[in-house]
Image (cartoon, rainbow, N blue to C red; front, side, top):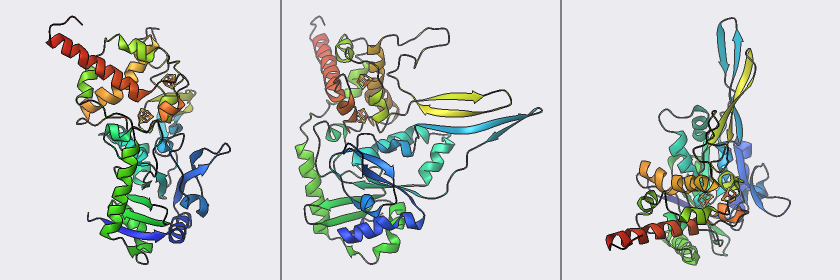
Length: 362
Ligand code: SF4
Ligand code: SF4
């Protein structure tokens, strides 16, 4: 679709964004927690909905599409008949406001997993009700590396609407990226000033400036292939030796999608529940026999990294499963840096190839 954009001042933005709950939308926006950290929260507060925030939230917004825990259905047995009852689902729109570009790209990775054929019914319903409003980054934090994995601080992947706060001018560029976004804005947009080419160019320059401030190195070409060839490399022990298997990297990640299924209740009635799980946990791959094909923590960490940087891209036209948000770097209690780990493994694999090509023992 042709790019539509408007320039709003702070009051217009607040009036529009703050009006969404009254129009029946469930609005999720970043709010300040007790320790000052920003966290995505359901809110009706217009001030909170319209306010920007520095950096990124501690946890990603994925729980609003893929809840930490949810009942998929309840089952009841009467005579020989089993009845499945799905929980009631809201048909109200859910508007996610203020996602960073990496967050919205992370949701697109979840789509790749949950909207496969056949789509996951609970996820698909929620996804169809959701509108994503991305807010371009005005600064990068030290752990950000979206530019190393194909993203951008001004990126629009996964966005329906896209907001750029232009400099310190108080002007906000609001762009419709999809038809869904355009429709959400349509009732109010007639009263907004149309954005000009100069406004779009200013937003582009701003994103470029934030991009340039990211100091982290791009990943080498053919990283997925290099990693695939490094499965047995001793470097895995080195990069993963500190991992304690806490799993916070996977819970905070916008694109990690592993879950566990548990049935509760008895023979006559009960429910099936889906909850987040983590490949970092020792029990994750443990068989009923007691055998565990990933008995060591280094093998579990390797799985996480390989899934994101080798296996997923091999099944999704080269698309990485990591969007470079850096949350796992910020939160890892063992100080493991996934970006540095990939560089180390890919670098070692490349050196090994080079050595093999030159006939040097590796
Ligand atoms: S693996 Fe880490 S850096 Fe990559 S998307 Fe997940 S949390 Fe962000
Ligand atoms: S956050 Fe760090 S220690 Fe915890 S599971 Fe992830 S890599 Fe391991």
